[in-house]
Length: 546
Image 1 (cartoon, helix red, strand yellow):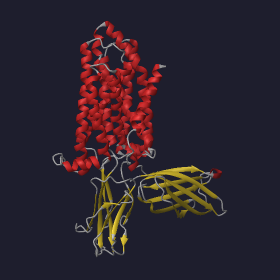
Image 2 (image 1 turned 90 degrees about the horizontal axis):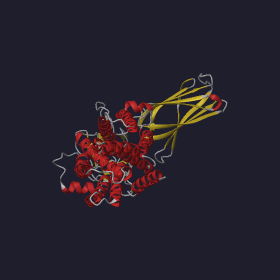
Image 3 (image 1 turned 180 degrees about the vertical axis):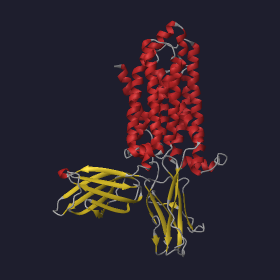
Image 4 (image 1 turned 60 degrees about the vertical axis):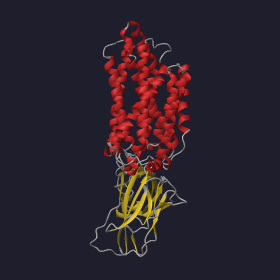
């Protein structure tokens, strides 16, 4: 019964910590609409241009300019976020612009702290036919080595700090640290983890400036840049909370082990979880429809991984106890005490990992055709290797075998560190939602007829839509009077757009156009009307990429 009470308190602590943080904007901004639109031809020069995004624009480090074909700026230099709608950025143009091709150059910072920039071309009047048709483009941040190393250090130090505190409070029997040298080593590792955690979080502030402002490490130490980052970005607000937590941990750490104060250790453990929650808040989880559930699941994932890795490091620290016979008995008992918690962490890791996969990997195709999907597959393989190590260690603990134990424990630790490195890269890559691949779905409707919908390339912008209608014998239906598609965004209320699609041959219809004008999840309703006035209707949920 005591074990189940500990589980309840553990989960309740995480939920309280997660919901104590303020709600932040979603990550990975993408364009909903713009004026002028991509490659739109305007008869007259517009007075104002604008772009609307799917989320609120962070007020730090954005830019919005317009250039002619020669690279000369033609806006008035007043690019700003609209007062009554912080999702819109706009600027005024200089009067009397001549006919020609122009480019809107924009840059904003997403909710996860990564910059997103792009170019939208448009035309005024009739430009020369010799001018090539320009394409719009959008680019995002790709993780560099400095980010990977610093964030990896933060993940490792958090795991050691939180995991070893948990092991000390919930698994290690009281009075079991019989050796003063062992106890001293345990404290040293926890203190080292705290120091590394401090350094990684402190350095993450200029790192974020390097990412958002696109400056070198030598250039970002300008106080005005760091101040703007702290006060006008979601990352800055979370960083201030994390810095406060570090100060509190410094005060508690000086007395926690020295006075063996369980209350101070528990407070330190809760504060350590809050640092992990801060990482979840500024990750992909904030893009979900139910961001609070997604952030909670992401935090559970991080905490479970920390408990697993930190506990294994704690057992490595206690390995010298096995030199004596009574130490071997104690160590076997320790494995038995850890086993139920180990099973729980595995279950939580698996459940939260599957949940995240459904959020960020929309199709099976995107699992193997996007960087995010392929890296996620690699993480799953590493997780299986971790399970093999854990299973072997558990068997050795139950059988009392002492051979090869140190190598297996260290193998589990090193594999866990590699998993954390992969997690760092995943957190900073665009999700597989950006490239779900061509959509291909089939639904069975009335009288066992089938309706198939194919969309390619299935991105925001121009797509080709194919509808195939077959009878219960798999043959094309010949008596179709009309077929139509109705598009409805699941991301926001944009109304419905219904179009009639052209017949190619019996049972097959096709049309091409820009009817999916933003990335995200869409509902596509297919309506087929026969000459006998019978209707065949079905809906497809379509993840649209960028």
